Image (cartoon, rainbow, N blue to C red; front, side, top):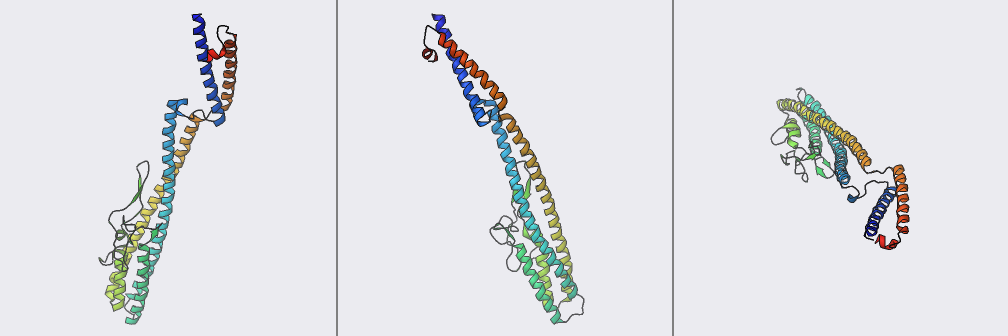
Length: 293
């Protein structure tokens, strides 16, 4: 009798294990996933969480790189207009420095130069999604006042990616466009040009011309650095996309169920269940209900 009890207990255990296996396989067939929760396979579940976290980081990198590229393209477009403005100012300065113009003619040129200065100030206060790009960290405040004086910060903001790379997203405007009061960069050159033309100072116009040429080179150099940053962002985006695709494949390899194999295994487990139930039914010493209990 004791051996019968032990046999019944072992049979009940086998039936419970078999029932759990069938339930797990049926879940795999229904969801298409081999691992749906930690208890299915703790090791694989942990690996999946790690892979999914890494995949999310790559997705975030790709999205951030795309948004950053859009931002830098817009900044470059604004600086492209500054290049055009400075080229026009150089033409005005060249005309004003030739020594053949009357005071009235030079003042008329000064009006045109003043309009260009205002356009460059507007470009210096370029906003992207409501942020002043050339104000450093002070993105809520215009980078330049109405006369071209820099009023932003010396610190800047950057977009940081999961691999540790960072790309500058805001800029210290006076290093790009100068400052009117200090007489530096485009702001200083244009301010000097306007004041020199207004008073008919040809030597001052000639000096402003040299400044304008230097300012043009300064802005062009900045645009070149933007191009380098755009290339880096494109590489980050491409790498994030490729890595994300590989991670997604790894996730699928770990978690996706082999439905054909699952169907075969399910059939075998169901056959085993029938066999176990048959054995339990043949027991004369206790009912199936007692066995399963």
